[in-house]
Image 1 (cartoon, rainbow, N blue to C red):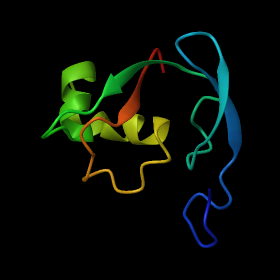
Image 2: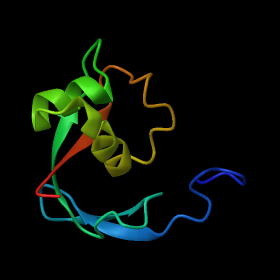
Image 3: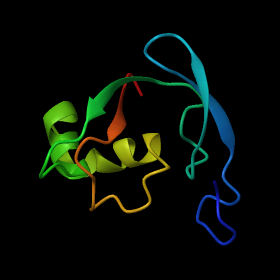
Image 4: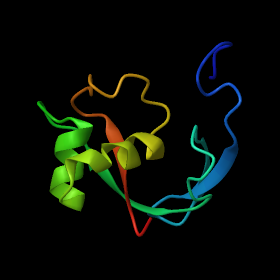
Length: 92
């Protein structure tokens, strides 16, 4: 659900390909983000943050926004909840 006044209120909606091949609707605040991208599904562990994951997966913590853009449903990127499944994009 997108709330009125949300930063995603005017965001474009795209279809993304899930690992099993099924497609799902997603929206992105960044208009230059690819309309389709491949990703791995990652289960958040205690202490995970987007910058730490970006360092682990991309060798660059400043690319945390790639993960944030791939997970627009996560409103507060600094408070990831253990057990949440997030998309880690690759080939972007």
